[in-house]
Image 1 (cartoon, rainbow, N blue to C red):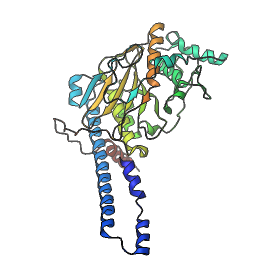
Image 2 (tube, rainbow, N blue to C red):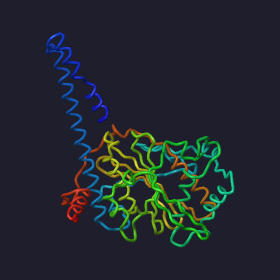
Image 3 (cartoon, helix red, strand yellow):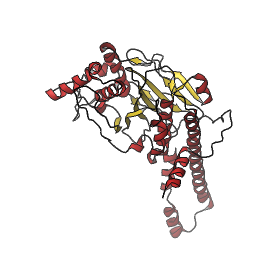
Image 4 (cartoon, rainbow, N blue to C red):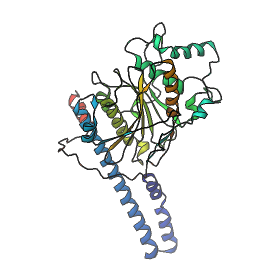
Length: 377
């Protein structure tokens, strides 16, 4: 709506009106008033839309602060209720499709299994074969404490690293037949015995994923913070959808993790504040949460104006060769998913204040900026 209003206002040429007045005299009132009223109405609607988005960010910020201040690594249903988090089950069939049909609203459609089977990984030379084999032997070769990184990197390679049959792009990756593009890949260190793995490249600006002032809260809390593995955004700028992999250094649990919630909230706020997404009111997030015991889950998330909606899958097992193969296939279907849904005209709910009084007076960003100013020489 915001983009349309701005465009309409810019194209309503006042120069044309003035030119008509010069040649033919003043415009009749019947012609002037509708144009003036239309412009005023559009400006009012644009102003209301901006105010609505600012309130949206403020509400998300208040949830982030409450989640951060709790300091607990796991969130049970009682805590979720207090934080205005609505947790739903993401039921998926073995073929990767929704078990009960697409939820409403739906922001992601899985890549069809039959189509994925037409694009198996190929290893055209010795180097490609060695690279591929390195990630098939992750159980024998992974150093203790690095299981989540090994699994995370394996998923990345299957999605945007290894060449696949039948994909005609230059690199022939699965990602190349999707709407996703790389936004960020974290620095990756050696995690396997006898193999040096250095794949550490920042593909673009980190703030496209999580802005700097969120980093201490999301990633630097001892013991239960995630490590961002990678981030992908939709190739077409008007699509605000974002997809992330995060890695945890502890075993999987059915409870929501504080790190998952903070990552989703920080990513959503960051996205809403980016210049290219000022016309959006919903930021759909697709999160792949990787645990240290070769378990992982898929989370879909969005903010409906009042609650953070979390759709959480079961924990998928990657700990045996059989489950490693089947779970990887399902995860590829979702990493190659298609972003869908109306993100600019989404009917937001009214925000209901927290039960307890919120004494927070400044946003996370304002607090960080104030601290930076105070520390400045």
